[in-house]
Image 1 (cartoon, rainbow over the protein chains, first blue to last red):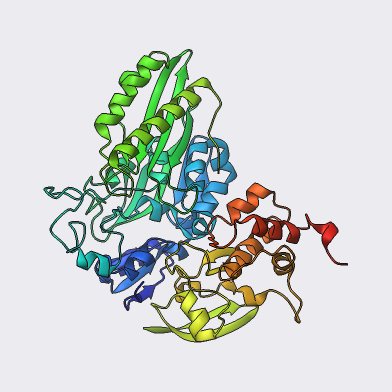
Image 2 (image 1 turned 30 degrees about the vertical axis):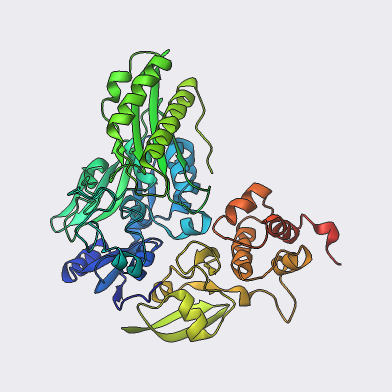
Length: 332
Length: 160
C-alpha cells in the first residue's frame, strides 16, 4: 500500500453545506465508511482528490425511519445499525440479511448504506496496486485503453458487488439525490448506468442522501449470497427475491442479482412467471431468464460461468423456500 | 493540510496537529507512539489494527485520524490496570489464545467490543464478532476459548 495522497478533509453537518463544498471542489470524493475508498486511494485508483467530503456528520443522513409499509434509510447509516434495527429485522428481513452479510463485523461498524449502494465496480485487473496495474498497461476502467477481460470490448465489464442494492431493488427502492437543483428522487435501478467504468448515473456534484423501501402486505423477501469464505470477501454472486403468493399460485415475483454484471440486475419479465404454481417447469423458465440477463465475465478469480450458475442456484432456492412458506433465510 | 485534532485516547483527552491524510493507525503508532495496534495487511482485510471507537471495533487502517475528532478511541494499551491484565487479556493467557501474537491486539479489541455489548456471548456470536480478524497461526479454537473464559463461561477455572 502507498501513502494517501494529500487532500483536505471536509466535514459538513448539513446536506446544503456538503453540496456547496462539492460544487467548490469538483475533484472531491465522498467519504462514507472508507472501507473501499481508502484502500482504492492508497492503490492510486482514480484521480487523487483535492478534498474528501465526510458525510457522517449530517444528522438527517444517519436516521432510519418508517413502519411496516415503508422505510427511509439515511445514506450514512452504518451497515451494522441497519442489520440490527428491530423494524428492519421484523418487516424487511431480506434487507437485514443483506446488510448483515457485507464483509464482516468490524467493517460493518464503519461501512455505510450510501457507500454500499455507490460501491465502485470491481475487477481483478482494477483492484490491484499501482505497480501491478502499470506493469499490465492499466485497463479500460482506469488509466488504460484496453479491457483485459474482453480485449475487443469498448465497454468496461468491472462488476458491481454491493449487497444492499439487490435487496432494495426487490422492495421498490428509491434513492433521494442531492444536487444543483435541490432534492430529487429516482428509482434505485436508475442510479446505475450499466457501464462498469462510469457506473453511476449521477451528475458530478450529486450525492445520495437516503434510500427508501416498501414492503407490500404478504410480500416475502430474502437475500442470499455465495463467496470464497463467509467473511470479509465480496460476493461472487448475491440474489434477492421478493414474492407473494396468491393461494396456491405465484402472485408476484421480483428478483435482483449482484456480483455478475456492472450493475445490480433487477430481473426483467418475471411477471410472465406468475399465475401458476412453483414447479420444475416454472423453475426452468426462471433459469432461462437468469441465463439471458446475467453476463458474468472473468472479473474475479472464479469464472463467469460459475458465478452465473451459482446465482441461478441461489435464486431457485430462494424462490422455492419463500413460496413454500415462512422461510426467510438465515440472518447472519 | 494539518488541523488540530482533539479526541479522547485511552481515557485522556489529547490535542495534536495532524494532517488530513493521516490514518488513525499511523497517528496512533507514529504520532502518539502506541505501537500495540499493529500494521499488518494495511488494507482492511485482517483486523490486526482493530481499535475501539466509542466502544465499537473499527479498523484503524481505514479510518482517517481527523475523522475521529471528538470520538473516544481505545487501543489495547487501555486494557489492564496497574500491571493487572484485563479479563480478556487474562483469557488469552489462560487459554493460550496467542501463538506469534501479531494478530492478538486486534483480536483482543474486537473481543472487548463484543463483551461490552454482550457480556455473555454464545460461540456463534463470538465467531461472528471475530469474523473480521485473521490469525494465521492458530485454528481459532483457543481464541474462542479465551473469549469464553473472559466472558465468565470458564468461571470455575478463574483464580480467586
